[in-house]
Length: 240
Image 1 (cartoon, rainbow, N blue to C red):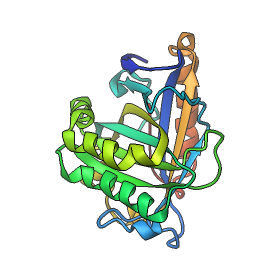
Image 2: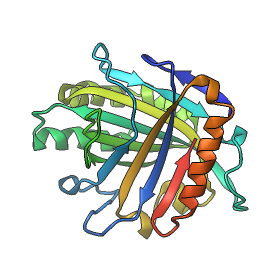
Image 3: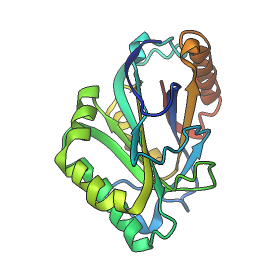
Image 4: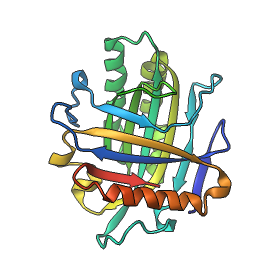
């Protein structure tokens, strides 16, 4: 596995992020446009070992791995296309009101209309408990690493963070990775009936740097095999 870019602020560990969309009951709507904020999709943040750093408001735990350099996960002959996945975990304030929550999520959602390169977006409140007490999550898919870099520098996005996110939260963590999806319009843009509702599952794993060449690849391979065993439950999964 070849690490293309790494940026970290507090930990020598390397973070690996797995995102998968799980099919769920229609009682949990998961619509993209327009986004029904009164019925936010639920998120599960599992296995996160990213510890709070109270000296920082925003932390970038960025590891972008080249999918072409990774071990092949399975023998799927379908043509693939590279994408860059971005996840943002937000630790909201305890006294966050419904109006403030709607304002924050609404502005984050509109960032997709302010720049090119964003293929898909979903966001909502995290369901269930997690040790680090993150309350909300945003997921975005970009065409390239360059598009992701432009996103971080986009003045509209910077203004959204400054005026509509940071006032309502204690901490933000960003994690990104490059992966592959089937080279077809529906899976690339996460469109179609399967994506109209569901639950986003986010798994963050930290490996010590010395294990990246062997054990980390073995772990990703094991995860990919596990994912393939549940085709009726998992709509789409990416990992890197």
